[in-house]
Figure 1 (cartoon, rainbow, N blue to C red):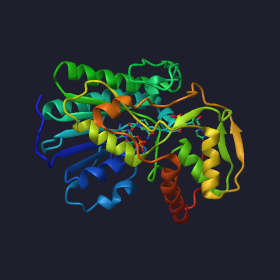
Figure 2: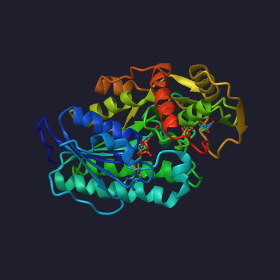
Figure 3: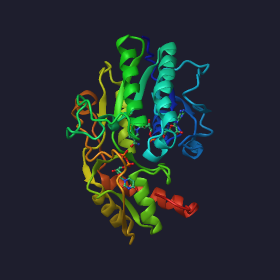
Figure 4: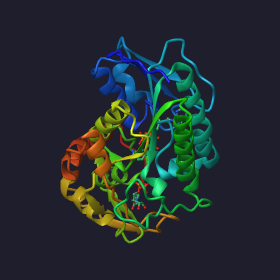
Length: 328
Ligand code: NAD
Ligand code: UDP
């Protein structure tokens, strides 16, 4: 295994035109690195990285990670964020989702091996499924329905983790795995379908807020800048921890509490409407972040209300410019 000690690195961000990926590109460029953003634009958009168009250390490649790809320049690090993350998007073409995580991650790991590059895989709290342990620690093996509609995502990410740790154990790739818990912030697509963007867009439009199930299920919401600092810390920590690391905000809220907070912060008079709970929807989710604290010295800085205060104006501006036909 080789890895470069040069302080200014060439970094490939797969999925770099997505919500999280575009913030990661910004942060890496701000640290002085060169960034190659690779994206198929399945769920991401050129708009997310438009401000970087003329940046001398930024390049954008339209490609699918399921196809082979090898840039002519030497790559020092690869972040693999390429995968649709919102349930309606990843379930729209479940076979493609599974192949993206398995074949696509395999392709990028082989690329990392050829370049001697460090590799960071964006895994997910979904590997814990509908968890029977609460909060979730990394040594919990999870409770995933491997044949249900979420499996294309959950099992794809679990298989991608397996590939990473097998490549690491074989001393072929310096691979790291982060398990990301629900993250939100500016640049989420307004039609992304996840809870924070749905509720804010609905509240701002005066449309009913869609609550799936009773609204008593919980999630823990991390602001995107906190996640990005965790990703960079895990990629660069030495030695490689050799085990997955949860990154998320342990503040746990019911969906009903989140809806109340969004109504209060937007000043919206929208009502709540109740819809059926999606199949296999996890009831509770909260990260145990002891490992991230100990190994990376990382913990989130922004509580939910502060993160929402920075996210709501983003959607308000988006809606002012381009009123949406529908949401949710
Ligand atoms: P996103 O949908 O905004 O970003 C995903 C990006 O990957 C998009 O730009 C999309 O076009 C691109 N992509 C998808 N399939 C591709 C392929 N085959 N080849 C190339 N590009 C492809 O989602 P996000 O919220 O930014 O999530 C980023 C990563 O973090 C994903 O891997 C996701 O699974 C993981 N994650 C996110 C969260 C979260 O709450 N945001 C939680 C857990 C895990
Ligand atoms: N959810 C909801 N209304 C929406 C979108 C989502 O009540 O308009 C619920 C969803 O059923 C889940 C929670 O909010 O219980 C978080 O959903 P999201 O899709 O954001 O993330 P995930 O389920 O992948 O954690």
